[in-house]
Length: 319
Image (cartoon, rainbow, N blue to C red):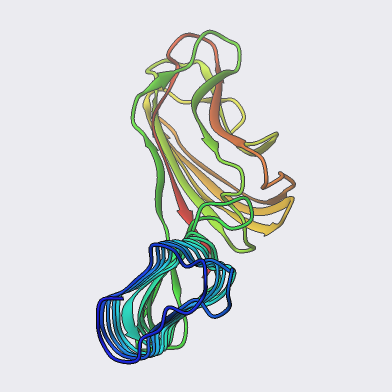
């Protein structure tokens, strides 16, 4: 004990502990329930309870590291608490912040925030984060920035809200963008550009994929058939068309409606010596919890009759 006023290091067995200053600071509350190597550097009414070894309170007022929360830190502030059984918790400062017993390895700071999940992070005001391995920044209930984890039950999400409404927007974007051309081969059905949609990409109902594929027809009078396929089901089949040169595009959207169901809308446009357009609206029955192959195929008469030049897929989480 280095100094200060009315400081106590009361529990027998609290070896190698230090209270270097301040007032009414305590390490250990009952004998032989060791909090070895713990430190309170200063402040007032700081408390490191039993079996919270290697924990530190750097200062502040009425900060507490509870029992069995080893290797935890409170850097300062007022009335901050790391609850029992939350090892490696970290409160950076502020006031009235709380890490619960399920908030192991979490970090928090600001005013009146709470963490109750493994490895979570919170900064700001009046925020509560119960999502493991996620980051939440919040200035008030309507201004939030939340990055979630990638997991088997919740797709990693970036959610942002503003002061105009009590609602968050999920931020999506390009999932993949393939620009290496693939040409048809011979008369057999050929896989052109193929991408794999990882399991659980469509985790919540109304999560969706939008897509656009493009390419060119060869300058000949051969019949050319193009399909777009998701998993084991064909979304759209142009059937064999005689198109002498020109460009083509597929565009559409796949929307999750259940764990093994999706709603799809798609369009095909082909331009050349002739112009043709076709569309599809249907329901699929693919399992969202497994990897799913998404591809364009072609059946034509000769090599290079159809070339798939690009394929872009966007992932849009549900609002």
